[in-house]
Image (cartoon, rainbow, N blue to C red; front, side):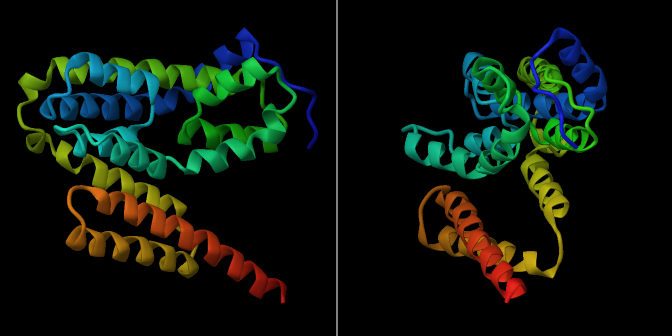
Amino acid sequence: MSQAPLTLTWRGALDGARISWALVPGVFAYGVGFGVLARTAETGLAAAFLMSALIFTGSGQVVALQLWQSPFPILAMLATVFAMNARYVLMSASLRPVLGSMPAGQAYLSLFMLGDGNWIMAMRMHAEGKLQGGFLFGSGATQYLVWCGGTLLGYLLGNLVGSPKSLGLDFLLTAFCTAMAVAMWRGRDDAWPFLVGGGSAILAAELLPGQWYIVVGALAGSIFGAFWKRHRARQAAA
């Protein structure tokens, strides 16, 4: 269904905030968990808050904490965060038909607020012809404020929580990645990229020092998945 060119409006932004309210409890809990983990990693309050304010990606930030040490492994951290969030490249590309008609400043501001939840909502609303120009910004801004606030609260209350293991927060990343894997599962063909990524990570953990197995596993699974998908598409077309 075709739509008129979009523009970011306050009405659209407020509607986006209202519609996406169901995402808030989960984002807040995740933000608190990240704050507690950041305190445990001794990042400092300012660093923890700036990570949430400037990076705004839960999985990448949690993985970055596993690499937080002295000396600071900047290259490993950059590669890890990029690998963990490479999906946003494809998600942003899928929004090109939606945001392409908007002024560049409005489009990029909306893309900064992009998350998994509001991306799914935006694509569904676009398919139904109901998407407003401010939806992505409004829905994302709501999650952004809640995420940053949860980070601050979790960090400040970290002493009261004690060990993250007492609340199962050390399992946060594993649970998140498992949920993402289940959500992305489309059938038996998806098993091969998962197996390649997991096997590569296990092998790298035995052969490489530090946390490089995270980068190796993510890149190996992603690269293999791209070639595998193309191979299966060619087979289907033959």
